Length: 262
Image (cartoon, rainbow, N blue to C red):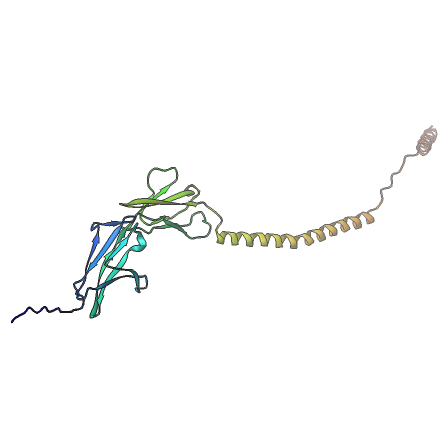
């Protein structure tokens, strides 16, 4: 008598197969499904892990499928599917790269203090984007771009350079802009020089005022002393009687001289 013998071989999970749907480029806002399968006996249990910024694994789901609805940029990274049964454990990873339009650009200016006329000014623009953004600089009320690239430098800043500057970050998925206003101001070094000049001017005035008062007082005293020693002018009034007597005496002398001659 013969019979059939059914042998069941137990084994640990084989290397999992991981697929992603849709298989095309993943864009922010779309829905993505990850599927994991592994040949194992007994059947494997599945757990999904994701690496964080510190390369640490964190569990995100259990089961053969992981659905990422309305995926965003923070969902990019390495995902691991772990297949496990009583005989063993194995895992496989898949990389998810979410494409997205540029985020709002960050615009900075150097030097960050007030801008002095004639100085060099550098504007820097950066935006989180995937794929990387291309940058273009515009000035208000001007149609033509001023520059392209993340960095825009004005080597000799003048009053006519004042105004609002816009940085546009763009890739194939979209565009975003940020604006920065620039104007000529008093730089810190110029302010220090002006403060020193003003302080010196005030000190000079403070020191000069007592000297001016002293010299004025001295001149006043000198004029007073000079006036006290000047001789008084005496005005002699002519006396009519004296003048007549002198005239009579002169006539008498003339008469006597004439008589002697006779």
